[in-house]
Image 1 (tube, one colour):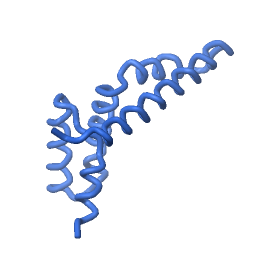
Image 2: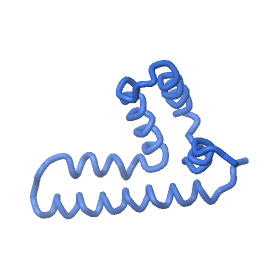
Image 3: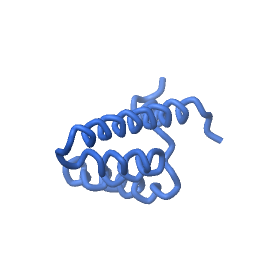
Image 4: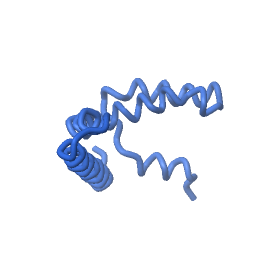
Length: 102
């Protein structure tokens, strides 16, 4: 019988090569501190790295279009950007989970 941790690790998105250093640092932080709050900055940095690798343009569009209140046009552009970002994340997740590791 496999452990829960093994199942979670296998179901995770593959980590892009440029994010592996952050993953190692996060794992080391969890091993040494045992306190999630102390590792939060690494967790966020890793998440941003992975999201940027898979959906960087879409994430940037959301940041730029949804950062402040604006006109009706800007709000509709923000909504469209959010939908594209969500679709990108969904596609990236499903593609990564269906593609066998090499």
